[in-house]
Image 1: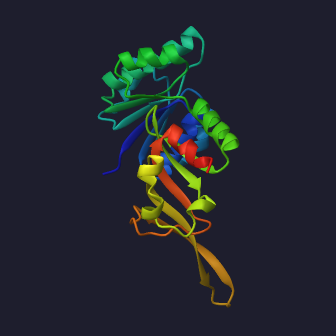
Image 2 (image 1 turned 90 degrees about the horizontal axis):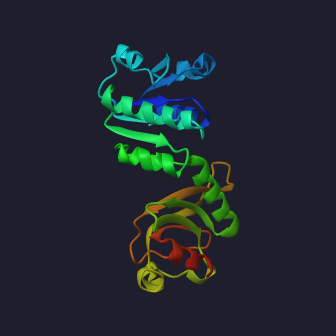
Length: 234
């Protein structure tokens, strides 16, 4: 059964989340007060509703119940904007019986209030993108970072020359660097039908301790942020 996801607000964040979820096969319903924004994606989502998500009567008239996830992407820094986001979140939980609510955060105080009201997750997409960009500029050998918690990250890093032609056992990532290798991304050469050499990407999930690191590999590792940054210096 498809997941039913409700997205409120078609700003840059809301629109892109809605479209991506629809591409992945979710049953996406969007609500926005701007008819032009709705028209742009109406044929790509399950349902596009013109309305105000802070209007309880409007929400009840839709008859939308047991939503798997509700994503709220409305409001701004003004007191009224913050209130709009909070009210919509409360109504979605009460009226639409949303099992999980994710809200685009406006500021720290906004996030604190939302968590007290029972919202499951508050995200700050602009802040997260800015931090990722800064990390890749300061640490160019770290290709991508996914924060699991305030302390632990998953990162994809360029393999140091020091690791090439050695096995994971020989390098001993856990003991020496306090990280675990989750995967290896590797380009494998092959001969095309016309005789030319080309490359295809192979991803080795949970490689064995005897897997040898090759030149050009990138490693997917998990560990504390400080330990991942230490490996970047090698």
